[in-house]
Length: 374
Image 1: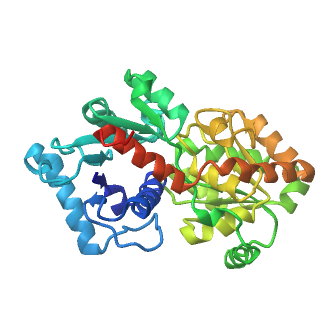
Image 2: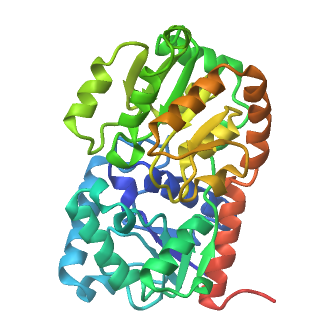
């Protein structure tokens, strides 16, 4: 069996989907071999994951994006050449005309463009719905990164739930058992002299960063003097007023902007508490990473987040300023509770490793292509 994966997300500035695509291909190849797992375009050059730049060389990036554009414009005329020799092509939402000479599969990451369209640019919403109608509904096999995402997709798109297999995403091994030296190095690099609460994620409306700022700045002054709020993540499509507020908030708020992937384990493990009041997540990589790093988590009681946290996080209503502020205050003031949650987090995160994800995915591809043994 040979699999070809649409690796276009690796050519772009992206967060969760790029994280998934990078680690997924890497671990699929470790298990099945490079000959069995190809990509379209052929972009892979290895190296550390970088969300801000392409994972291919400049000429390969422009050539790959050009080929995707031509394929999207010409339809089946070019798509027939994609993934030649593959038994299954795994599509992303960026390629509108996947090949028809083999099975087609898709990963459903979330349904936020249907449930919270106001938090996305209109063009992104339109593209997601077009892809769902033309590719997802016709796919030979579907993966969902959580049971929550599967339930949402089945309900919204009218899909039979049994058509969708839940395979949880993974967490990089670097987030498990982070050495103290890595934490110290990151604290020094970013001049984090005080204990801190942490948010990691793209600054976009769905992440609810404005309410988080309000919650933190509403804490008693003595807590804000003792604990900073550190916000890490690229600007995304946030309103300029929010970005300006992040940069000038003061009062204990530190906005680091984009933090390279290699610094995230130390930054995460060094936090006193991780706070993530997102309005919707299909999986929630930052939360799973915080659990793996043994950091107490406060997150939302909606979408996939209760599922992913497995009882190891303090859940709040993300639109309730009072609930988020109260949870943050109680967590910062209760070291005993923090210690218990820090112990439970890595136990839950054991379920989110990339090798089991890749192994289950290969079995999924075998069933889709009819090559499964037994």
